[in-house]
Image (cartoon, rainbow, N blue to C red; front, side, top):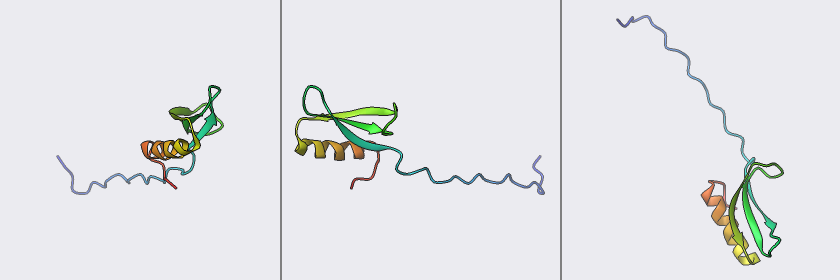
Length: 74
């Protein structure tokens, strides 16, 4: 039976997720070109996001990886 005097439980307030922890960056490849990573720079938390052979395709690959990982595109 439902009691009319029952008080609902308080709702949890969710805070904003920290922004700027995940990024997209590139590193030179030993075979030539660039390897594009996404994740937290300076740690082991990174994901391979692509590869580029020239600076022009590197810019395109970084933009494409940012869209893929839901990061703001500058």
